Image (cartoon, rainbow, N blue to C red; front, side, top):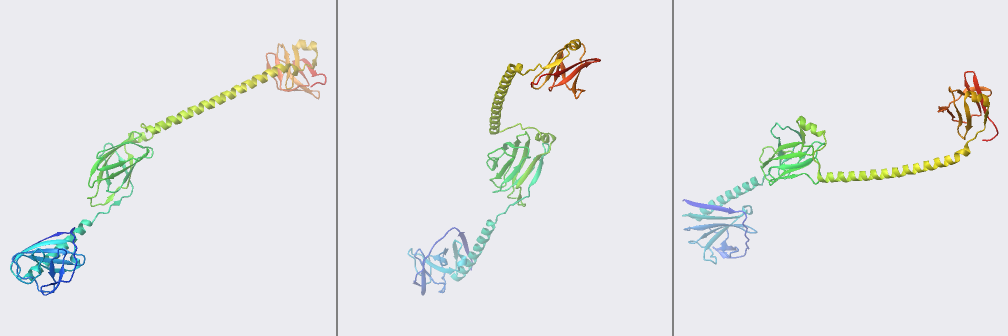
Length: 399
């Protein structure tokens, strides 16, 4: 006997039912929430029907497979709407959702119910397999940090990025990120932080998206990179950290030079620091000038005091042979508390000796414009030129 069945599932659908004692088809009955009474599955199956509508109803305690017919020759309880319905309880494992089926056939109802049960089981298995396949997700793995050499003449290198993952790009230690130009700023996030540094983070927001990025450093180097999200790749490894270094000679030379771009905040900070240093230098210079002025005043005061008191410190207490002295050119001999002075008008500079224990010895002195200055008090001595000799000595007991 030929018949057709159409089954559809709505896995999101839910329904509830209550059970109560009833009668119908010669045995106990169960009532669903629409108040349709059904026969227990141990009773005789549904007989012939011209057209039968089938429903799969999940409840809190069981699942019922129901047949509804307008023409029914056997015994069955009637629902409130006048339609006739027969239901069979299914195991709890067949309760993923709600199924609806329509069967058109001629013949015993038992064959019809068996085919519907088989169709329902296949649909449930297919639904379970589909849900498992859709639930599988790829777990991304970070690569070890790597170094990329950027050459202006080469194709920009590719950075592998992953959804919900951040890739950190690091410039050389001598450089900082001055500005960043991103191709797709909607599907990608570029984060350089809140302070100037050598770091920039990239993060994709859309699977399988691609874009490019241009990083300009404070030394004037420009690094271009290609970015690719790898969700559809067979290789699930993404770049976690990438070190960037220039490969061109000009780029390497720029690293040793001073930065050409300085952040406004940093420039302001340096300007303020310079102003502080200038102010501090001016203050120090003023203090030094004040101290120098004080020293000069003190020196002038001391010199004035010395000049005013110096004549009282001079002692003219030396004697010598005036006749021989005049012949040699001696004019005056005196001392103070530190020095001995001899002044004369000499044709030739005489040698100066100090006498101790009757013996003469040369002593140190300064001579300028006919003035001898000996850095000590000479008690006795003489001047000599050739065979000419004039002795002198201190007289009296004064200091």
